Image 1 (cartoon, helix red, strand yellow):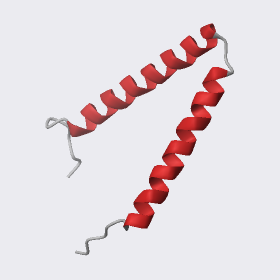
Image 2 (image 1 turned 120 degrees about the vertical axis):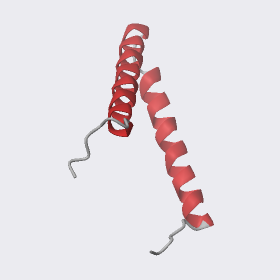
Image 3 (image 1 turned 90 degrees about the vertical axis):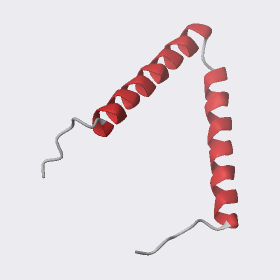
Image 4 (image 1 turned 60 degrees about the horizontal axis):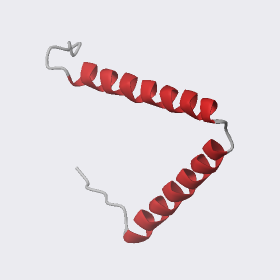
Length: 67
């Protein structure tokens, strides 16, 4: 087994990209009407909830492994 780690320079790059992406998302949201912003926010909440259910499904101890 080999252990790999992201170097400091890589972590800085990732943080920079994440911040720029967040800035772009905020700018896009600001260009929407309040009703559109609410729709997008609701859709994002639905996606988070679906991802949580999916994660719980795959982490469930009763889930069959197929082995």
